[in-house]
Length: 297
Image (cartoon, rainbow, N blue to C red):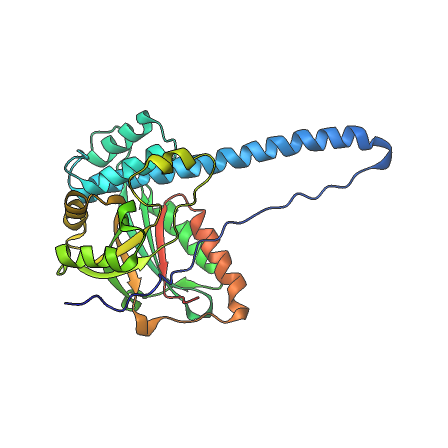
């Protein structure tokens, strides 16, 4: 069995809304106003950073809870999906206490309300199909927020699952000894897992910054990230075997949706503004764990 045609992932990147503060300066009180404006700006930036921090923490906690539920065990040694979710949480400075609480919630031993995973189908601007996945403890709240996001962008809830196939996704970081050679990596994967892997795609590499340069230098794994696409029934097992047999780092494990190649659409320019508005609105809903489209860039 050969791999399907190898192409880069076409799903659009989520957009982040940026708000700009405009202020008038009164000439005869410019010094006072400037000082006040600086203080207000600092407060605004701190509030914005805190909001982003909370959003990341909530997302990481949500992924851990889902990993326990879907991976079948609260033990990361037995649940590769949970193991990778915990590693990502620590990298994003999520505290041990919050991680433990998320695991308890997924195990059903927490006093907090147990959540449920929901899926919504919709059509957005320009006929772009969407599947939205959410994890929530209040489905009435979540459906109202997701529906509002579609309505405000000239979209609506409508059947769209037939535009997609259900797939498993495993993000990996190969060894530095593979020298980031795509053919070498593909050959190693084919040799060990020919029957399990359907496709392999390159994602953006992890950027090397002054903050992580030393860590990257000592790391045995490359900063190159690839995504394996597989049958969703074997995702967890395949990820565990890849780690054990090839010593590749498992960055993320999930099941989701991939648009069918013959049903992808190229959005027209006049629809892009509202389409980006919908991307942003969905991204800002804490209950939304992921969304997929059939839009081609």
